Length: 197
Image (cartoon, rainbow, N blue to C red):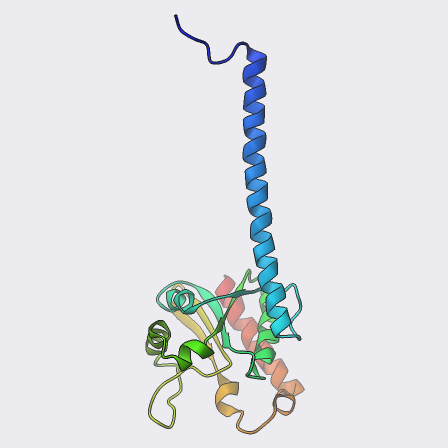
């Protein structure tokens, strides 16, 4: 004799409804956790760079994340570190322009330790970006802070490190004049508009 799985239709419908509710709760909880992680990263970033608002677009990246972008993926990356006073200006402008064009995230890569320790993945990033990176006095190419990298489908749309090369002994408040701010914002906006198309 065949045993019935459900005693009647009401029991079957009840179990199906409970099953759907459970699935919905799992999806809801998963989305809340993702939003909390993203919020935590943006708050952490704004604690490092005080002039960037808490609702920023930044997510923290490591050398592997950046290498994947350089090797053919798409992404907007800010190379910098808190000790570099100029990074906060680029961080602010990039976040502002990213929001204006509808960008969903910006990768922040604090590369200082990887550079100091000659991390192999970092060295590969430098090698793969060799045509863009400046050559230092010792004849070695390297990434300087701050640098903005925009890559779409493996094509470099922007490698912007003007401040890291041209600043000399000028302090950030002197370097970032009203005209310079407008120039940087316009450049970022045009490149990011191309990126999000």
